[in-house]
Image (tube, rainbow, N blue to C red; front, side, top):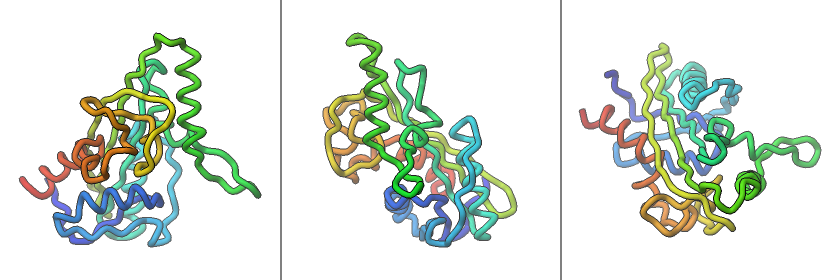
Length: 208
């Protein structure tokens, strides 16, 4: 398997929270992370129907535009009682129009939508859910590698905690009684879906 072979890579995201989390996971391996946002790279349209497809779209676009290896994350929440939704459309459920027509994401609206759909199914509806993460690593010449991770848990309401982002305040991972937004970030880095995917990337890129 091809190695990164560089101490500098582009993280294909404009999300500050995601950049911080990924940078922390790669820091022990001496990798400097630059965000696509800081380089002024455009965000490609995520037209894929799977996490793998969307991660590859983002990683390839960033690698081609920057001339550096690029790493993209596509992740989302799937809810058993909602037939796996929102899944690949996790971020889309948070989309809304702000003042003057500028796009933005309202995550409280998104988690409220999930909760409303669950409540509509009745008190006996399963609250089992899981976060999936796909990491796509791409090189400017088109070569790529993909790593997939997952963490299972249940949904709670109302939201709790302030240290996470996205759907973290309503997700309680298996074996814990706190939400991802209540768990110390260092602990979350060890147990999250992104950590699972990163463990596979690290084993492949830095340990083999």
